[in-house]
Image (cartoon, rainbow, N blue to C red; front, side, top):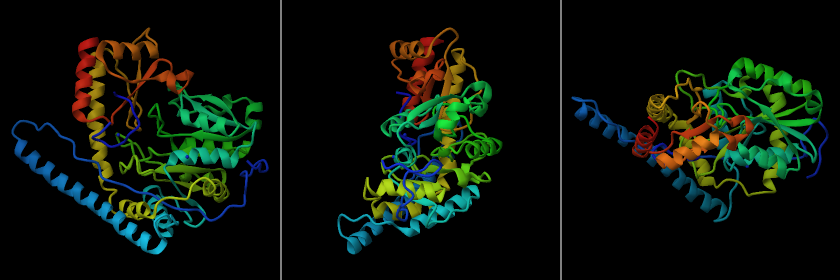
Length: 412
């Protein structure tokens, strides 16, 4: 399968009504905190002739460095777990202010964004729950919530579960997969209370710009729309693409929150640890929903998250080299079968145009029937996904090579 959600680089890799313009419930307790990370494994690489011994040495050296990083994160979790049990007992999961402080430091270092750990940061059991809690905190029954098409299907599910009405905003390749706000009808803008956006974008891989952020803030202010900017792929970019936070835009904190996660940059899929950051009122409202939904993040994971954010960020560039190598390999094979395109520069997905005259489902089925390769049809992400498929770069090297050989043999 060439499409799945895991992010480990060597394995197939979240109703009482409030007033208009305010969260559903402004009375909320102080935010909880949390998250964690782990190093990716070293994938095998084919050495060039004459360099096998040197590359083997470098691979072994890198493997030792990664193993050391994994041990440091694991030790932090173990030490934190022992401290947690001594102080709180087996079932407790109290907030860790130090983790929120580390998130604030990380956001400042990576994006130049200043955050107040006490009021502008909330730990999440993965960023996905943040999407759901945003709806529960902000949206009243019958409110319209804007989302992109194509877009992440979980947004629609959360909107519907919150008794809101999803409204699809097309994002097209001719506009670099960015929404055109002027195309949204005035009556829709008037009824909308929230909007989901996600760049680097799943499924297209498109990236936002600082100029787009400025227009987004202006649009949100003019229409009293709260922004939920889902940014788990913030570190997963190629070819010199700038890593950006929506909150770096002037006025962004006045109109929204940003969700992020350690799953993608630190390969922490399955640990379920992320964060919501930004507007204090929205953070407080999301916290109110969350504290009545779960009991927070296990302290040991939060301690390990501190270690990861503080010491292990150097591994991100190494991880991106792995994804980059796979990306080029896929693009080369696609070109051989007549699919030549310039992909956007974000995420570990490729949004691939189908062969001329062939629809998304037809090409998806042909890949399965002729090459025994599974990909995601673009139409799984909305009607404007027609004409595309999504391929993931998170499968192991040997599995990816096998899939590409089958595709080339079947379609060349």
